[in-house]
Length: 173
Image 1 (tube, rainbow, N blue to C red):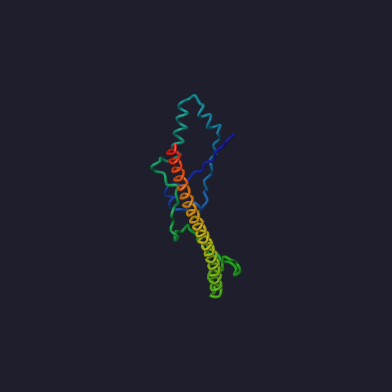
Image 2: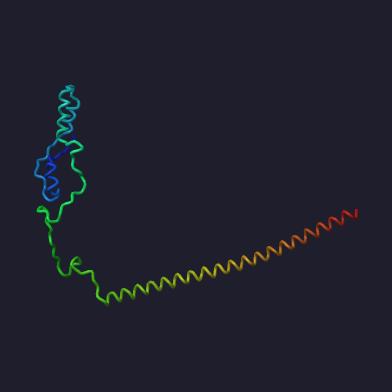
């Protein structure tokens, strides 16, 4: 058996004047069971069915008159707003000031500089390694380029000598 609970709410003027969390609702909840809803829906009497629909419509205001369910902004000096001043013991972290002494800040600055210097040295060594690698690849490329040119010259010479030999043999016949 499923049941739903609905509560009576304050009027729209009361809701806008008081925050929703400041006072608990004193209205008694109304419990509606699924069986009672089912009997009215399964009823063959159209008149009874029409009354249950009109009753549900009277409980809920029309769309144009409903209040927004968004955040209600209430001024701090409103009488229903209670601002609690909390005090903490001196050793509690919430009571400690976030300010630091000059010695602490100087120590933190030195640590930050040291970390930045180590990062810079690491990055510089990485860049130097990349430069060396680029230069070695460039030298290897130049070497391969020279060898390629030499091979092309050699192949060209062989081709020319083969064509001369072919011409000479054809003339001798």
